[in-house]
Image (tube, rainbow, N blue to C red):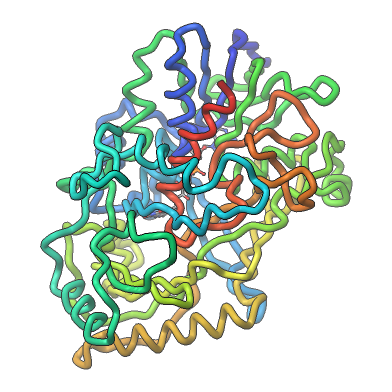
Length: 479
Ligand SMILES: Cc1cc2nc3c(=O)[nH]c(=O)nc-3n(C[C@H](O)[C@H](O)[C@H](O)COP(=O)(O)OP(=O)(O)OC[C@H]3O[C@@H](n4cnc5c(N)ncnc54)[C@H](O)[C@@H]3O)c2cc1C
């Protein structure tokens, strides 16, 4: 039997990195009744909460209750199928991630014809979400709930990497969150939303404190399966909670499920490529290119034999190059990062070589009208020869920078797990756009997408800080 839940002014699907901020911002108006549904567990259990606050590990190992797992096809020639995860709890992927909290670059916001998203529009929102403990310049905030700090006493491997990069002619960049309008190639300490080992993302910083408000309700373990429409207006959401099916109604519905799940939900609800929807028997509500132009950071990982540093953030420094590479000397391998030793092999620390402005575009495809059947995810990382050539140059540079005494193995294909742009923002005439500049789904009413899906393409830096900023910025459009 389906339970009908009372009507809300705003219904938010997903309490993740963006959704947590949107929920806090909109519920600041006491007359606005906000309901958030989250597929993963809430964080009342102190054991689960502790896993999200421990910034020195990623709770993504085998059996973690805090993630949703998928498989992606990383490359086509040869086919490489790899598992990926997304955070599924209050704070979303930001509650389980590496804590690298680096703003996109000003040039990432030069989106043609998208009004209201230039650097001068977004900088105040970057400032609002943070308290930077290292810098008090006008570029930084001092009142935001997310504290940002860089590592000052680095591990030996990070220190050696910095020295090698400087010897190779790369300058030290003091503040990666304020390094001018152009990408400055150089090496710098990663701004982290981890302070004294404690990770605070937008779940802990925004949503959890706001849950005291009587007009804000969070329903955990509740997964949305479809948006319901009357004509072209979104009027409600079907979901499955701990007690079975639930039907929600709301005046305004906001999808914050992240790039995979918001795209999946749109397609299950009839918003997507017309031929694809018809092929699986989903009636078309609005033909839009959902999931057709996804973007992520390809990464090659090279095993090394430097000493694993436990009890450290996973990444202390990065090197950026002119050709858009980010070289990452990780402090440990998978075991140190996750605490999961079930694979039974020794830990290999590695250097990551990531391409930050890839040309390749991935795809998310609906395979079934059944919400329990995951969509097909294809990264298509080897679809652009220039991307592969740049990664190869990056691997050679990484090898050069590792000290001569360090063994560096052959690179393996991987992904940074930063998938974005599955429902990209764009101008009216842009055939790729799924949402407009105010994050409204085109061609329907009362439906917004606010999360990493709406980035027109991936940022030149890890996307977390930018996605939290998007939540803060776009909440204004729904209000
Ligand atoms: C392992 C890992 C490490 C990463 N490390 C970094 C890093 O160090 N720095 C960085 O910049 N980026 C990092 N990222 C990427 C970054 O964390 C994400 O891009 C960002 O958090 C995504 O934010 P979002 O709001 O789009 O989605 P999410 O934060 O993933 O939130 C989506 C939320 O919606 C919920 N949800 C989904 N579908 C439904 C549904 N149908 N019904 C109800 N709820 C639903 C999910 O459970 C989740 O809680 C990492 C990602 C991963 C997976």
